[in-house]
Amino acid sequence: MLELNKWFFVLLINFLGLLYILNKILFRPLLKLFKERQDSINGALGSAKDMSQKKDDTLARLNKDLTDARDKAKEAFESLRAEGGNKQRELFSDAEVEATGMLRKARTELRAEAEKARQALRADVDKFSDEIVRKLLKV
Image (tube, helix red, strand yellow):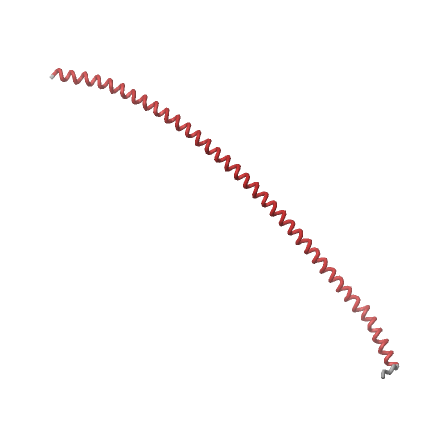
């Protein structure tokens, strides 16, 4: 059986003393260090989740702003395009009116020139016919 002699008690006291000393010097600081490390990890994970959420919110806001900007740009482009089309039609209409006026003026001038030429030719024809008649009568 188990004998309980003085060495047993000495070893028991030695073991308990060593356990107490190791607990004070080693185990508690290690447990404290492990707890601080776990708290630090949990804090870092929490801040990472917060930053991830902020990133997602910011990306969503940026995408919304980008979509709004695209819509505004598209509206501006369409309005400028319509304005340009109207301006182009207006310029073509003005050019057509101007060209029509120029054509009328040119036709009027041509008719006047043609009439002058006819008058000159009639005068020349009368003169030539008188000359032909004189020459025929001389012969």
